Length: 38
Image 1: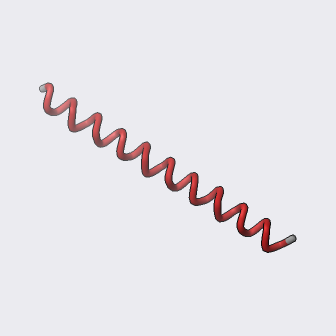
Image 2: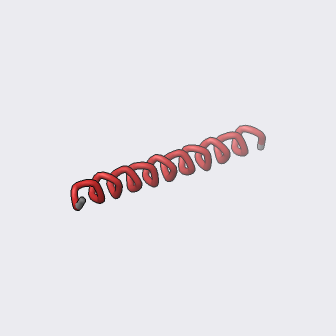
C-alpha cells in the first residue's frame, strides 16, 4: 500500500515537472517570437 502511494506520488510529481517545462518552453518561444516581430 505504501509502495503504491509512493509510485503514485512520483507519477504526479513527474507530470507536474513535465507541465512546468512545457509552460517554460512556451513562454520562451512566445518571447522569442515577440523579439523577432519588433
